[in-house]
Length: 261
Length: 253
Image 1 (cartoon, each protein chain N blue to C red):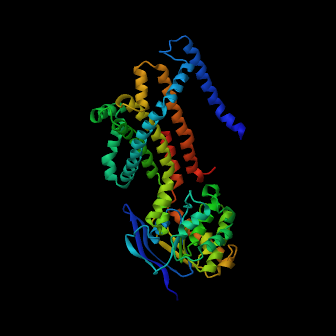
Image 2: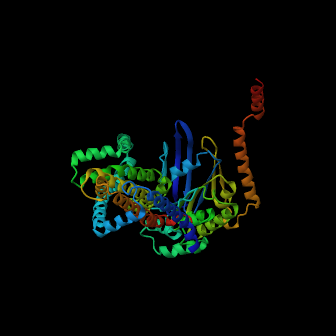
Image 3: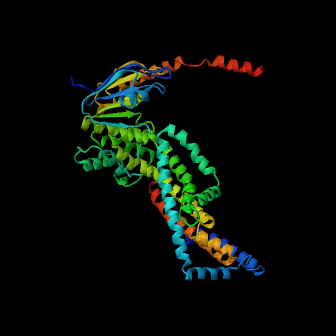
């Protein structure tokens, strides 16, 4: 059993006395992809920020393995608008002096992502999908051990999402990077993750854990096991929404009464 | 290409020509002391050029503008950085800047003449400084507050050094605000320096204007005005336009 790269232990966090995360514990080993899956408002982004070290938890611990290199993929691409595609990659690469053959790596990532012909372009000249691709390969350009991803495919269309997921899974298979991926999309989680933690809405709490043992390259959402998992997750989400369902009959009755007054 | 240049500038050429015609027609029936015609004005212009008054006065005014304006640029940037850094300093000093901005320039000139006298460079330099400081400050300050905190967070997460963050994020992000501050500030500074020289100095373009005014040399007054306008236009449309174009290279075209 290999050691954990990242371990969150009993994380609790509240804002203005409102409990956002309640007793979250997860772990991530080398070469693993772990997904935190939850509906919006489940405190996913807060958990991402805590794991990335941007926010301190009220209680609990974030334990990172020694000397690991971290990188990040954000919901909306955070690119420097005044730097070209290639310079945006260099911007992060230059911070890691021990990175050897940086240019070679940069060019191969640009080619793999289809951005090579645009390496002298500025972000404003790229489409939304291209920007997100750049965001993704920037995270890979520093040869990280661990990537934190916050809804990495949220701002792109379906086709780009599938392509990006393929690209990510191919590169991950080669490099054995560990990934902590936050998402609200069960399909993304099931296709990419080895382990899925499902968060409840309102107070973020882990309510279910899935282990997916099929090799990533062979996964397909029409495959029975995966299909069932997706369905199960959707059922959980549905029941969560059911809990906070407003009684519409009551509401409309109330409104009618008001109108007649 | 050529056609678009014609399209761009033809209306302006036309309106200038119209003003010229109105001026010429109006001047026919007026005494040259009240309204000198274009010919008399151009004669005065030639005279100013021939005697060397033009270059000597422009260089004096320009020197003062550069000193006053340069120090207001430095002070404006420092102020903006300081007020952006600490909200306590912001609350303490922000009203002060508003007070400086709200005070009419003529009050500053009166004070400057009282404090520094007439013969000195100090009166125009002081006025230029005081008038352009708020303009520079406000532009830079707004640029700083509009800085994308998500980009900063990204740079910090990727272990960028502080120097790198300044060089690769702060500077390029602030450059457009900086250039617009320079542009607006320069117009303020140039007008302020002529104004200060007009009232409180014994040299420079403003002083030449006031001499022409006192001696009832209206044609010369017109000539100096034309010189001032042409100079400002050159700075605005040639130098600053070039700078603006360079700065915005990365914005989508």
